[in-house]
Length: 215
Image (cartoon, rainbow, N blue to C red; front, side, top):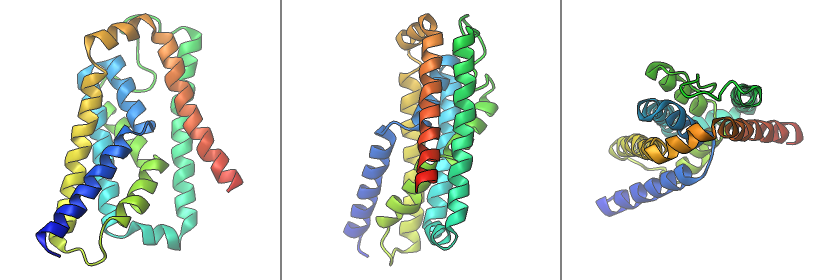
C-alpha cells in the first residue's frame, strides 16, 4: 500500500474515533461525572483510564479479536453481561446517594468515582473495558477500516493514532466539564446531577440486558 492509501486509512479511522467519542455513552458520562465531582485531575485520570482500555481494545482488534468473538459468541455475551452489571452497580450507587440526600454537601464523596487518581484511572479503565459499545466499536467497526493486506507499519500507526486520540478526546471532556462555571452549577444541583448520572448508567445497563434477553 502506498503512502496515500495509508493516510486515507488513518484519516478514516481518526474520523470514526472522533464520531464515537462525540456519541454519548458510558465512557463519556464517566469522565463527565469524574470531572464535575472530583475536578480536572480526577477527570483526567478517569479519561486516561478510558483511553488505556480503548488502546487495549484497539490492539486486540488489530490482532483479530473479532474472529475470537465470532468463534465463541458466548464469550462476548458474558462480557456484555459483565459490563451491564458493572454499569448497573454504578447507577444504583449514584441514585441511592441522590435520593438519600447524601450528595448534598460540598466535598461529599463521589458515589461513582473515588477521590484518588489511581482509583479514578482504574474506574475509567474498568468502565471502558466492560463497555459493550467499546467492544463492538473496536471489534467490528474499527476492523472494517483496516485493509486485509495492512503492513505492520500501518497497524502500529493505527494503534498509535487510537491511543493519541483517546487521550486527547477524553482530556477535552475532562477539561470542559471541570470549568468553574460547570462545577459551580454542579455544586448547586448535586443531587439532581447524581440522579441523572445514575439514571443514565442504569439505562445503558438495562438496554444491554434487554438486548441480551430478547436477542
